[in-house]
Length: 463
Image (cartoon, rainbow, N blue to C red; front, top):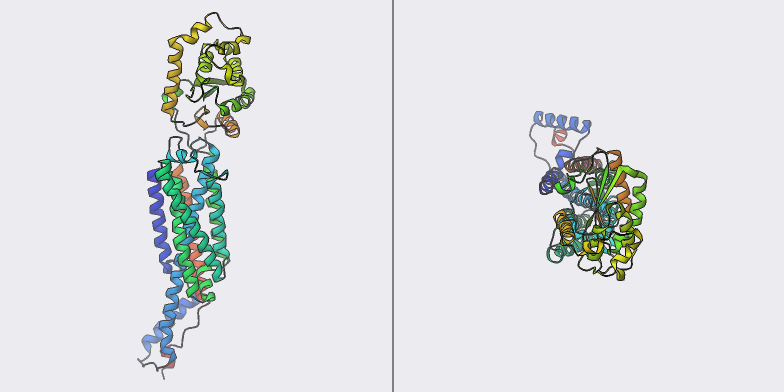
């Protein structure tokens, strides 16, 4: 992730360099180039004549000043849209990550992104912050493409300033409250700060320049608007495409040893008193039913200290006969917490017909050792939440039936397609570079087309 971030930063620095070199993207029509050559040849052939004093002698500096203002306007508008492009792409990646709930499309479950996602600061009024950010940045980019009046740019700058303030707060929360940084969140926040600064510069340029001149220099025409709109669509769509085909890392050795060739192996870390584990169990059983003997379900016990009935229930599950553990799990998930005690848990499984040594098994050190080994394995997985379910190599953390259903389907189909993350950065860079080049050329043409005709050359005035 660090190398990818450095590569993206270098790519953006290159785009900024290209955006600043307005002449790179300025394309003059052929007739202008011919006119320039003819004027140059006539100037060399004609005798030197001092131009008459008057307003004509002042046209050159005025034109030069206007061109400089137009160049600055094009530059800051390009930077503003680039910042929004980065914010949109990173927000889209986070939306995918929140939906995946553990399957590492962009972040692993042991990463700072996962720590931020499960923190209380990841939502506002129940809505995930990446969803809000994606909507806000997309709206700002659309407004930038459609703005024509000075107050439009001032309003965009004010909205961007609010976004920059929010980004500063979120960076502080990651540093001091969560204690972990999410690389994608930092990308969004830094881009939001850059957008706040550049939008203020855009508004300042719009206020200083005549409206028509600013529109020609900064807004351009239909080609520039179209290419930036397409870039925004790509910034949203590409992360969703990559999130659908992530590169799945290999399983840890302990879990790889549990896999059976030709079967889908589901390894579930669970707590029988965990409310989300209880909620998931009937849906998971229904999902697994169509696969029949092609699927093998393994449960690992992770009784949480906050659930007093979890440990007695885990011991009861371990002591149940292997051929009756599915029925035992169903009874333990549905039992009231008051029955999950050392002296009452046996009554929960009584309908199964327990072996004579069941009570002795509950108190046996080997039973506790088995549970301790499961807890230690869960700790090494760094899953950070229950339920945690491995479907083959795919990890889904939390209650997410849709994601589990999709994981089962992909494992059953042996879906081999995966898109490496560096290719996403290459694709995003290509899209943004195309937007910068086409947009800058379009604005340069618009500015040239609206410029005043130059004064007559001195060669034409010579006798």
